Length: 333
Image (cartoon, rainbow, N blue to C red; front, side):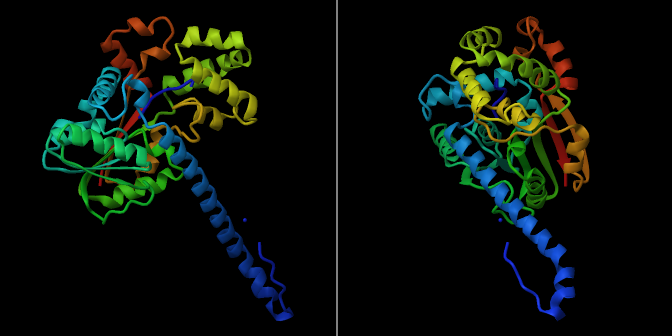
């Protein structure tokens, strides 16, 4: 996706001969009640996630053109593969001819179109109607074959063993139950099928330095009008985005907590959920797969003060291999 931003009890009166039974059953009742509460909380959070991405389809801001037009999609694609030049090779688009490919979080259909061009039998799903409509429109404009539907990554509406490849780039860390989504990936893959999943990397320069130190220190500038201007000069961030962060800082009492600060400083100030994963945490998520390989990519030079603009690509690639923001998981069922 997208990348970087400045970012319920009923009471029961027991009879004497029911006391022991009721007491023994209570822990189970409490567990069931807790599970229900968690389910309700996740459902509410997921609705907030859906609402955010419905209003802000991933990648739209990178094209100064009317969404849904041919030039819009061309500009989005050019920006994506200029900034994230590693994606075509990392995803292996060219090697997917005749493969059944599912993309979870199809976005604008940018990566999906590369699978389709390579001859894959492509299906794209997304939590939002906005993304599905825009992705479908792209395929129509460029005469590409593909199927699209609105779907929840945690409850995919596909039979077991349906796909050769499941691809998801920067999506599953935005769903409340990421582990459930990974289990769904495993379920719908055929034996020997491959998952290509990107999650945000905990041990990255962006998280350890940019978000946790630089942005956390700099966010206090946003308490003053002059500070907003100063932050805009230093970061190159859109001023409207900085004002949205300033509003969050004033109105959201939890804004500076570690979890909330991460949420708001990955994909926009209004983003309600984002998570990061270490290699060990990612390996645990994919423990049901027979083979798992991990590789960090993407060192956004904009996050490196002074040196970033002149950083040569070979050095950028070396930094990304150790400190990259995008942790790619290659897992075989």
